[in-house]
Image (tube, rainbow, N blue to C red; front, side, top):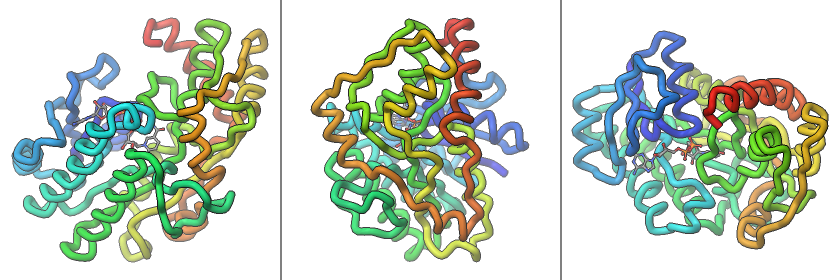
Length: 314
Ligand SMILES: NC(=O)c1ccc[n+]([C@@H]2O[C@H](COP(=O)([O-])OP(=O)(O)OC[C@H]3O[C@@H](n4cnc5c(N)ncnc54)[C@H](O)[C@@H]3O)[C@@H](O)[C@H]2O)c1
């Protein structure tokens, strides 16, 4: 299968490339930025700015992919600093990719939405299908992406599939999300011996370890369409408090000093997010399941972070 990835140079994209190459797909990696050092050397790397409709159309026309994994985005924290850029990349960029799919006849589009798409005032365990009233530009543009994708599915028969990711954690440099405090407890905690989280100790949001997040995308893309009753799915793995994450890091890195000092802007974003997602629909319709809980993630992640620090990558 031939797959084109937008935003391939980010935290998710780099891991996804490796996974898709390993299963034998032909991958065309695209991003606004140059090929990162961590990208596999044998993957073709093409410059693509998703805000440029002509460039998106031309590249999709030239590559003729069976499937596009559209990851390019400005994440929540950066998006609140530059809402105009977040609008252009997340909203106009997604429209441009959908239009290129329609015009060129790409069969499938995989999209990554987020817990930030929900907005405040929902039950602690948020169901798959609820009214969505996000309060950040990131959330607003991601809901719009979900709805546009559903529209293209109904109107043009595009096989649009989407996961709502929790905050993602991997041994890499985080991309400007408001869940980054969780990863920094591991990376700064191991590298510098200390880290002060920008949230309260009792902040609780849904999180997921990257191997589960990559498997979710690939499994959803491969699920038989007739089993899917919708286009957009909550997926979940764990919902620890920041204090529980700190405790898990301490169990593996005993001398680490982890403290909390809430930043009002980022705390407000975190407080507007769900505390946990109900992913029963994804489990029923395409067999989604997570493999990593908090302690399983810590056991796997700590050696990975140490390796990256040794190689000068963190
Ligand atoms: N990381 C998380 O915790 C998380 C959580 C929920 C959803 N998501 C979603 O998953 C997807 C991937 O996230 P990530 O963590 O890899 O983000 P990231 O910030 O690490 O990567 C995003 C990539 O998009 C690229 N990009 C930015 N503007 C672009 C443009 N105009 N044209 C083309 N590329 C552009 C960036 O260069 C970057 O490589 C995003 O859609 C994000 O919204 C991520």
